Image (cartoon, rainbow, N blue to C red; front, side, top):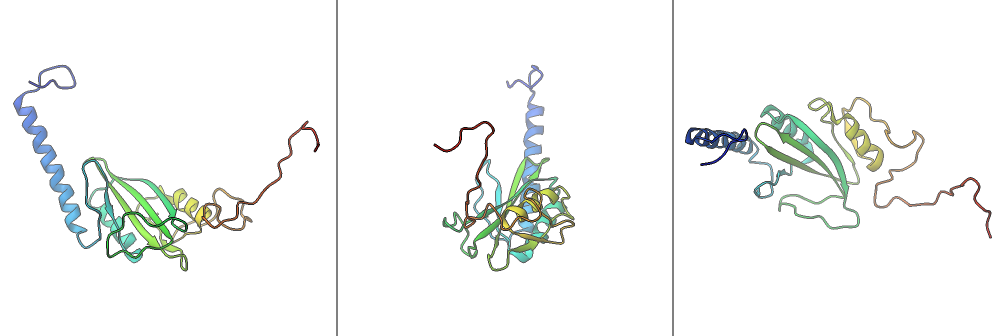
Length: 192
């Protein structure tokens, strides 16, 4: 007989109720996935996020569909620059580009994660903003713009967030020159 979290014995009715809830949650997750069946995906593994690869033009619609299905939270939004490294695991229909925008979304009620990976070409580094769906993306999209130069169309304040306004370039791009800034320390001895 299993023990519940309060130290009492778990009854067979509790076990059946938990199994029924897991089945219902899995059914809801399957319904979400069925609605996105035309989007290339990586095969799902246990305890791994479902990874979707929409075309850049469908990014906003896919995130909106996940929100409509009950996805409560945008956990993270970042950019990957694949200039020096080959792409990892991509479905056959996806053409690799230099940049990839990655949005990690959580279905807290289902205990599920979705990762939306979108290829963005170097020649046109733009993608639709998801600010209207998840306002918390505001700073994340600005950081992606500031560090990588990805422009989020429809963003309410597409300005730098980390670097000075007059900074030239985007420091996290793989082809950004490292450069050297001389550092002056107080009371340091002069050159020998």
